[in-house]
Amino acid sequence: MTHRIRVAGLVRKDDDFLLIQQEDRSGKLHWSLPGGRLEASDADMFRGVEREVLEETGLRVQAGRLLFLSEYSGHDMFALTLIFECHLVEGEDPNNIHLNNTMEDDNIHDVAWWHVSQIQTADSGMSRTLGNLEFWQALETAESVVHLGRHDEGG
Image (cartoon, rainbow, N blue to C red; front, side):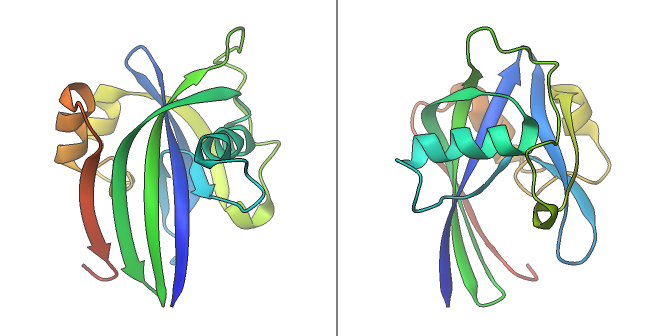
């Protein structure tokens, strides 16, 4: 079984969140937080999430505190995802989002700012994390890292 550590960035601009639209293995598109695999070449997990956000959105961010952990098990793989609060680097234009740094196998189709109300009322197309009520409840009130649970393939 393969083990993977993933990092994701929660980037906010007032009540807007930076999301990427990505195609999963089944060909279905969903919106999620920008992020990906922590690489051995990353100096640490904070630099890893900063790299991933830059690659997937074109924006430079500074990683802050670790907010959430989630687990996934399936396809002969176990993944632990670390979700960090991220802030735009001073002077970074939040409207300068682009996909110029993505690789073809990232399967990223779009990047956009979404208002919290749009995310919470979307009928479909949101990632499991963004559709998790516990995520939204803990976002404003959690004083420590919140475990969002374990998702097993098919469940």
